[in-house]
Image 1: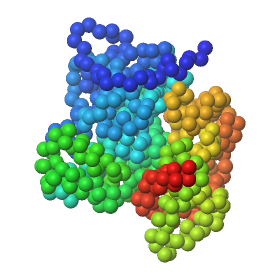
Image 2: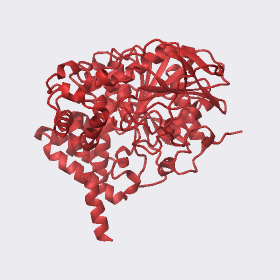
Image 3: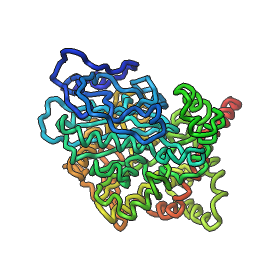
Image 4: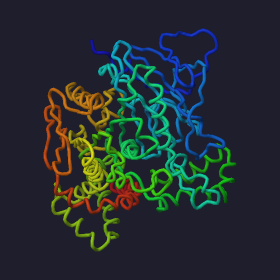
Length: 546
């Protein structure tokens, strides 16, 4: 009998934390790890271990420094509650753990208690949120439903430092030379979590040599960059990048990076790194909320961790041993245009026209012809939709395909295009639309905004089977779907258009791809203009009209 989803996923919020256990305890789901024994809980046949620390707390002298691995230990600890989240972790309403802290480096594990498969494939989810918000304790990322159906899989989620705590350039600050990893500490946190998985997951029944990392949005960017990082790429074999790519990294010294640093110094009055390190957690967080948190965030290359642009490292074969599956949705940007469902299609069109209209005049003269060519070949001909599609291509699909083009010269790659729209025609197949299918989380409130409630079970089963098949063996094909590999010379893309319409398309939207490809280096430039500022103008116009 099919279980109710509400029984498997925690939707209530809490501020409880795990404690050390002194005395007797139930050893049924107690697992000995490097840093102690963690006692899990079982509900409806799914065992979870929540809030396991994978690194020392990045506080005090470790603030803004690379993470340090946990110390070995013999203590016994509860693993009942999610660990504290990074500052920004409660930015989504489905975040279960409501405590935010600099001490945030925790992970969570789910497995099916009834499945006795040895050396289970391991899937590690890295959350999105623009490197600014989100956590591994969001209800929509729970692994409970996934491992209930895909019983041989072990699934994990992780927290990592966000925004200025995880991605900050201090090179212009006196003393900043001792904080060379700060522009990428969030990525190093992820790498440290993967080290913990590699060294401990066998105790849970997982195979440390069959690990897939997967993520969406900023998580998709993360799992695209980790393959070229020596600190990380020895700990996994496969990647699923959803709506994120190597394009989600900016050069150190750019306006976004320097703006955050300048805002921190001005708000706090700090002059040196010693001053910054002397700030209390409360004062630092006050600066984050008051000034720095207004800036976007991302990893920065040209740094100690990423010496050059990640796409260039792909070209050189840094990730040649990794198999990659990646894709995007057909209407990515509609989620961001006034928060998607909040705005009508006409208002979204205005938003897109103003955003692109501001940016295009600043293209180099020799590059403007590419935008004109894009408008000529665009699948839409209506003003507003043309600009929306350009944002989708420049920020999501084309950088992702460029990444696969480079990687396919070294190893096997797969690509998808999610065109199955949500129930709201103004949202379409927006950014994040595929998540409820991957995790099978129809109980989470945001799902109905994307796809309604009357969705056939078959597409949930098919999508989850493809994702987990890839984790099992590196091939996402099922008995119903033959998924051909992608390469630069043979651009096979799986179009996921509906429950009965999932098929390979060759050279999908290739004319748009060719037109935008010469412009991908303008990604960060477009991000500067892709702001919610126009929302207020649109809302004011709506109010005036009414």
